[in-house]
Every structure is written in C-alpha cells, then in structure tokens.
Length: 153
Image 1: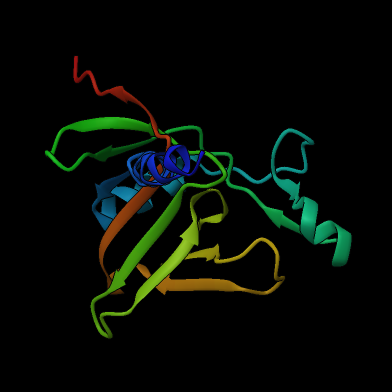
Image 2: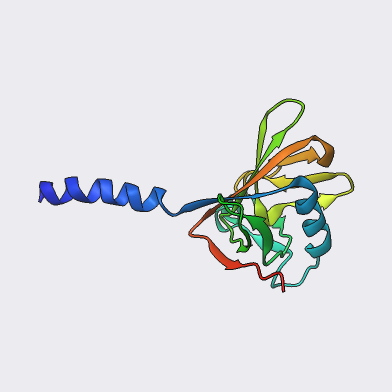
C-alpha cells in the first residue's frame, strides 16, 4: 500500500505540472485583439459572471470580456489560436519597474491606453492595470490548453 502511494505521488506531480503551457503575444497585437473582440453586455451568457465562492461572502460579480480565442505564439514561435478558459492567466512585465503583473485572461479589458483586469475573483477590488506603453512582454499561462493551428490562407 505504501509503495503504491510512493509511486503515485510523483506521477501526480508530473501530471499536474505537465499540463500547463505558456504562450506569447506582443503588447500591440494583444491590445488590438482585445479592443477588437471584447464586448460588454449584461447578457446572461457573458458579461457578469458570479464567482460561486465570492457570492457566498460578498455577493460579488465581475466583468468578463467574452473573448473566445486569441492569436498567439507557442514556445517554438508557431502562430496558433488559444481558447482561454477561466483559469487562463496573463503575466505582463513592466518596462519601467520590471514588475510582473498577473491577471485572469477573461477579466482583461483594453481601456484607452491601458489594460485593466482582476488578480482575484474571490476578493473584490483586486484590480490591476498597466499602461500599454509600459508593457515589455506578455505571457499567457493555460492549464490543459485547447489550441488550433493558425492557417494564414
């Protein structure tokens, strides 16, 4: 019994860590895609999404951008479409401070000259923002990613 557990733990760790993929997009490309595809509506299928745990304590809703796919690059530089889900996260690196700003992909909106998004769905008010001109790089992290090859034809 103990031997099975000893074998299962590393296998579980490898399974959990092996399912995350990183994707990259330039700040200008990302802002253009967000600005073009985001839409805000009070349609029940989209804009306001209730966080189940937050609703127990805070009755909190957050805006979702309803973007179904984003054109980005994988680690080898290949263009592809990534279909983000609720766990897809962004890491935006600041040119000026080198700080890394993290946001959930589905909460990011392009607002004028900045990107605004949520860091947490459980704690209201954990909004992050960064000026587009201050973004050095954008990395997208996806657990169990669903992708489609980009066909330029």
